[in-house]
Amino acid sequence: MIDVPVLVVGGGPAGMSLALLLDRLGIPSLLAERRPATTNHPKARGCHDRTMEQFRVWGIEDRVRRAGLPATSDVACWCESLNGPLVAYTQPAPSTNTPAPRSIVPQDAVEEALDHALSTRPGAQVRRSTELLTFAQDAAGVTARLRSRDTGEEFEVRAQYLIGCDGANSQVRTTLGVEMEGPEVLSLMANHYYRADLSHLPHVRSAIGFLVRPTDLERPDVNVLATGPDGNRWLAVQKLADGEVPFSEEHLVQLVREQWEMPDLEVERINVLNWTMSAQVARHFRQGRVFLAGDAAHRFPTAGGNGLNSGVQDVHNLAWKLAMVLSGHGTEELLDTYESERRPVARSNTDFAVRNQQRIDKMDVAFRQREEHPEAWRKLLAEQDKQLHTEG
Image (tube, rainbow, N blue to C red):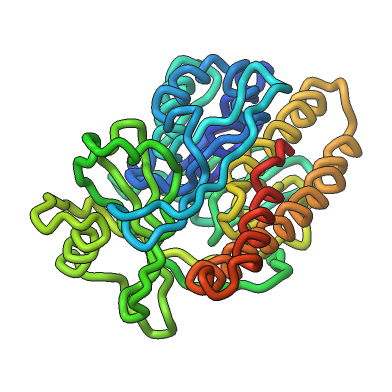
């Protein structure tokens, strides 16, 4: 039996941020993560001002920022080809309200920075390749059974509180029986992470994402996203129709060469990740001594980039409250404010992301009709400002 004040299940950005915060507040924790290492896929891309302010306090801002795109990068660019005219950009206003402005940085780099910071914190135990099997709570705490995926060894952890940071398909949430509110499936997606050295092209660092919308409707619409400052790693985001499977590697290579109009371009697919675009918020963020945070508590469309950022702010809200109660300076009622403060934010951010996605979908239609209806196109382009100039 391992005895620890807080058991954190899930070692993504939210879970690692929580373990780091607890250690800074003098509270030991054990973090259990199923994966053997940090993610090998870019996933979320972008940390907003408030998240970067936290990273500044934690001492990882510079490392995170070095892995991101230049601060001058625009957000999105609509085009018919990646080597043709770049028809329209959406450009965010520079932030003047913070010493730590946003950074367009992929999630794998964020996780690496958090993991390195945790390695220097003695109060935060990190056990990778470790999965949660079961847990049960009583009036005094939570008893969880875990298993090493490397050795098969099982062991028990006794904690005063358990925090589920275990992602969109949270086992902690399922075990609690907490339902999600909102549509489970808005669309099915596939992220193709590939390597292609395009660093010599002057425009590859000019935008975070290129929304490629060919005039030939037989060719697929694909969002191409830069995943670092070097111009050599990219995400091709494919929207899947019902029953459709992700591009094969051969198809991806052909598609990438067509998009960049470079028939001899060397393309290597690193990996592919299937995911579901949802718009859901957990009905409860707390049940007794168990809490939900990050994607376990809310699932947003990606437009606006609020998923990772909301998770970091969840645990920033929760960590000091846990520390106050565990140190005897606060009562259990303080922990109830986590749900009452964070759930409305999750609901608001979900609605915001849905509206952003709807604007982009309308924009895709208007883009192809821009010559026939130029005013409608320009109006929709201007409305993209609603998701760009937000520092919340």
